[in-house]
Length: 153
Image (cartoon, rainbow, N blue to C red; front, side, top):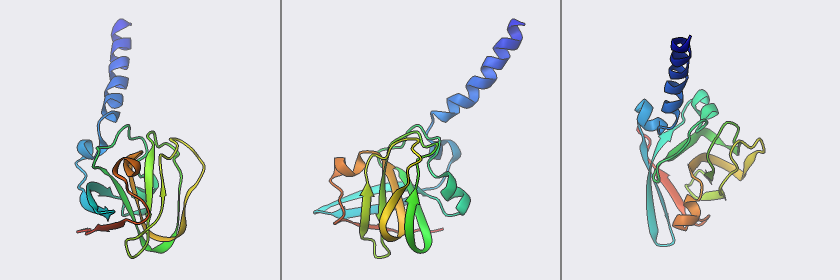
């Protein structure tokens, strides 16, 4: 009986241990460079890209951490109003809503983990960049900055 409980405990512990790893390291997901320039400073990030509907639906759900220079980019096929929620997202995020010209429409800072309240853009956007919560304030990123990236697809 003790052997059964031990085997059960180990089978449950192994998947949970994997959850604490950064998902991009665990899955080997490729990243692309994203640059945010403004106020005389340039900040570079290496982010995953959520290209498909399924990838965008999952986003950063179930992650327990993000690297300081990491995040996820959600490019849209055509500009639209962006609306996200934090269901199953375990860490606070800064959501940067980006217009087609790379200018920033809105920054939603430190979104609330697991909230079902929509986090929306102020207008039509071409992409959303999610970074670890507090990054925009820490680096002085505001709506006057410009966001650029080259997606090799």
